[in-house]
Image (tube, rainbow, N blue to C red):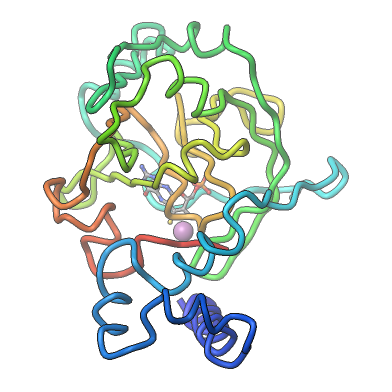
Amino acid sequence: MASLISRRGLLTGMALAAPALLVGCDRLGASPSFRDLVLSTGETLAYRTHRLFASNTLAREFDPSQLSPTFRTNGNTQPRSADYRAHQAEGFANWRLEVGGLVQAPRAYSLADLRSLPARTQITRHDCVEGWSAIGKWTGVPLRTILDTVRLRADARFIVFHCADDFGGKPYYESIDLVDAFHPQTILAYGMNDGNLAVGHGAPLRLRVERQLGYKQAKFVMGIEAVASLLPIAGGRGGFWEDDGSYDWYAGI
Ligand SMILES: Nc1nc2c(c(=O)[nH]1)N[C@H]1C(S)=C(S)[C@@H](COP(=O)(O)O)O[C@H]1N2
Ligand SMILES: [Mo]
């Protein structure tokens, strides 16, 4: 959390101090309503700054020699739902990724379907707010390939990832905006470090959204939903930790 705060402090300082950014600053609402903006979902200063100045940048990719010797697991490592465990026992042969919501052609994908689509592999650094990082190699389907197939409706603004696990009965979920959803490095990963994605790391499928922090990298993804607003979902803040009040919805790095 400390790094998040200092990062926000840095961005705030930058935006307020640099004359070149004053126009952006106005647009960001450095005014009496600034506090409201910062506190409302999706309107943090970091989010606005990223979207104004760096929406298409790529996250750094690394060389295979830089892979971390061990990549720890974090958060839930074994969903306890009977449904998930049944799929796990079958090696996910009958598991399906459900893609729906505000799309014109909802559909379900088996793991074989996903593996048959053009894949992307990337070596990136995962940064957890709890203060650790690891470099891993991820292989999967670009999310935009899926979204181009199901065709978003014009009113879709966010993509929500519904996960198989829960904390105290509250399902884990996450969400991103369409800039990140169509970003070339945003993939649905079924492979890690040249092997199958292990259960501890989110099998059969996890999100990699490489310009954001660890908690956005949803594991055990069962469904993807296009929505117009995050407010009607669970606690209305766009993710499990966001609803909990622990972390911000936008975790750009
Ligand atoms: N479904 C689900 N996704 C999750 C979590 C979780 O508990 N459940 N933890 C998050 C956090 S805080 C981190 S740092 C990463 C950990 O991924 P890893 O277990 O592959 O290291 O997954 C993220 N995605
Ligand atoms: Mo994390």
